[in-house]
Amino acid sequence: MIDLKNFSFFSTLPTREVEKIKKACRFNKFTSGTTILKEGETLEEFLLVVEGQVSVIKSHAGKKKTLFTLDPGDTYGEVEILNGTNALCTLVGYQDFQVMFIPRDFILRLIGLYPGFARETRELYSRRAPILLEHGLTKAVFGQIVTFFNVKGGAGKSVMSANTAVMLARQWRKRVVLVDLNLAFGDQAILLSLPCDRNIYELSLCRPPLKIAKIEEQLTPHSSGLKVLLPPPSPELANKIKTEFVEQVLEILRANYDFVIVDTHNQLTDLEMMILEMSDLIFLMMTMELTFVKNTKVLLDLLQRLKIPREKVKVVLNRAFKAMGLEPSRVESSLRYAISHFIPSEGDIVIPSINAGVPFVMQRLEGSPLFMAVDKLCQRLVGEEPEKGTWNMFSLIREVFGL
Ligand SMILES: Nc1ncnc2c1ncn2[C@@H]1O[C@H](COP(=O)(O)OP(=O)(O)OP(=O)(O)O)[C@@H](O)[C@H]1O
Ligand SMILES: [Mg+2]
Image (cartoon, helix red, strand yellow):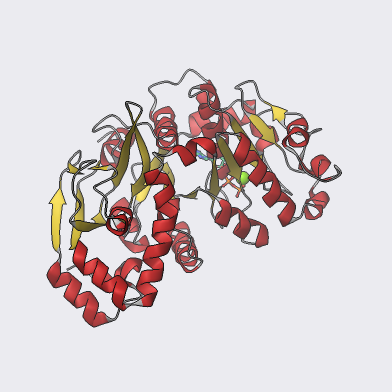
């Protein structure tokens, strides 16, 4: 039995209204690859994803682009319903998925009756309308800040952020800057074999105003085409870097690069809070251990309280391997969150690549599950429509676990 109160979308409504919604709406299950809405169709119902994942795809200049994906609890339809337009996007699910369809008039009635619900819907509208109405151009003008985060160490934030950044720069030819905001003990210089003479500390000594040209002078180039903003050369200088300064740097970088990939420290100070709020996408990295599940759940609840939109937060399960003692589906239901990406455990590849200072995506590994997993993550960031049936949590699990 589905408990609608579990979905934050309904949290501002009284229980009797939630009961009424349940009676008025329909629930449908679909198989992977099903299109449930086509761009241009009339949208009579508001959608809420109950299970699985749904891609929101828009055609632009003859190409299809995935603008974002909806995980369980995410909704779709507010922009069309409030604007009175036909569907602005096509919705395709890439896992077996379940959707709740709520009649349009029902949503309009709730907006009229409940100010809290109206406010939430309006906020969602203002976040999404620029993306949906302007054909995703906002994303093209401004880059995306993509942050790898968790409050517990050892999840693979540094390794995965480095490899993702290198792949985006090398394979996808994107303009990418990697910012190591583990200010005291950042690992990126080691992971990428870079000299530390240019760094954020040197940048902070420049006379204001801060301009992109000054930032560029402190970026260290990597052979992949990636540029890196390294942390201060020694840990005691970390507290000289003020949060407002980092915010300004990220804002300028976002306006000048396609992707600003951020590696973080495993703590939650003002700096991390600012980064999370600024990020366009947050990859919550975790491994399949109960302590990680607990911490990730606490973190997801916190992000919800901070009103960080759900669609910005994606859970990535790193070091996935066959005998984990925990079922991914049980973890998902305990988190009440879908796992968006699985990265296989490949110590034989990852550890030598760290020790050599050469990201594994630069080695001849095409076709290996690890390479493919990072490739899928990049596909999602770049917004390329994934090949039908391959971008699928379950097929990836099969690949990874050899089932
Ligand atoms: N997919 C993987 N397969 C095998 N080993 C991995 C994988 N990802 C990460 N590791 C291992 O986990 C260790 C921790 O990774 P990493 O340093 O990236 O974590 P982190 O989240 O940045 O940690 P910290 O919070 O300490 O900075 C690495 O030393 C690496 O050997
Ligand atoms: Mg790290």
